[in-house]
Image 1 (spheres, chains in turn orange, cyan):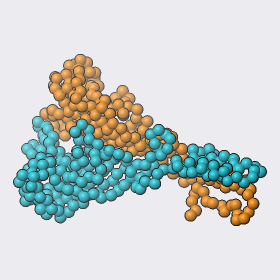
Image 2: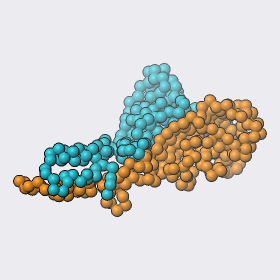
Image 3: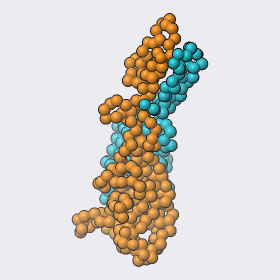
Image 4: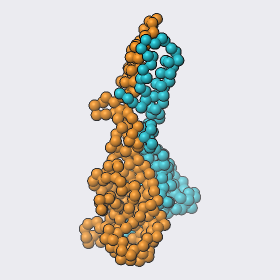
Length: 207
Length: 200
C-alpha cells in the first residue's frame, strides 16, 4: 500500500547483479521516510502534522502535562503582617491539555489572621511558571466557615505580582453590591480553621 | 536529513561485494528506527514522553457509560429505569461525563447517606477526600431541598457523581441525601461533571 514515508521501488530487479549504489539509493529512500517523523523534544508535547501537511511535528506550544502537589498555600495581597498559617491540607492536581488547564485544589488551614490585609490568594506552585492566556475560565469553590449571607463561591484567576494566582469570589446573597466580591482578610476570624477548595478550567500557555 | 530513527550508514560501500551481514546490520538499524515509533494503542493521541526520548500515548475517546443511581449506604434501595444513559469525552486525564436518569421504580426505607451516581468509566484522582471535579450542571427532579438551599451542583468524589447543596446564610455545603428523595416518587437527574482521572 502506498504511503507517504517509503514505498519499495522494486530494486534490485529479479536476478540482477548486486550493485551497492542501488542498495544505497533504496536505503536513502527509507532514511527519507523516517525524516518525515518528528523528534522527541520538547518533552510532554502533543505530536501532530505540520501546517503544510508534509511531516509530523512536535507541537511545542501544546503541552500535555499532569501533576499534583502538596505545597499549595494562602496569602493576603495587602500583606500577611503578623498572620500565621497552620496547614492541614494543601493539595492540588492538574492537567494541562494543549492550552486548557484543569486544576483542582484544596487547602485546610488554621489561620491566625493578625494584621493581614487584602485579598486572599491561593498559591499553586505549579502555576507559577505558566502564562495565562486570558479570561477567568469557569470554576467553583468552597470556603468555610462561610461568610454571612453568602451561598456560592468560585475560584478567580488573577494576576498578582505578575504571577497567576487564585482568588475566591463569593456571592453577596443580599444583592446589596450587585457584583461578586472577593474573599479578603476581613472575612477571617482570628485563629480559625478554614477549608478553601476550588476547581477551575482556564485557557493557559504552557511554560 | 538526520533523524532520530534511521540514517543511512553508507553501507554497502562503493564497489563492495555483496555481504549478507552488512545488509542484516542495515536492516537492524531500520528496525531500531521503527522501535521508536509510537505504540499502536487504540483511541489515543501521541505526545513526546516526559524525558524527551520517545513517545507516549494519551487516551482520546468519546464513549458511553451506564449510570447507576445509588447512595452511600444502600440498604433496601430499589431502582429501575425508564431512561439510563451516560456519555463521556476523555482526553488524557481529563474526563467530561454527562448522564440522564429517569426512574420507573425508586423505593427505599433503610438507605442512607449521600445520593450519588456510580459507574463512571474512569476513576477520579481525589484530593485528600475532598472534591476533585469542576462544577457540573445538575438538573434534578422531585426531591425535598435542605433548608436554605439555593444552589445544587454536581461533583465527583470516590468515582461517583454527588450533588452538593449550597445553603444561604450560615453557608455550608452538604451532599443531597437519599432521604431528601421520597420513596415511590419518580426521580430524574441530568448531571455533568469534569474531573481528572488517574492515568493518561
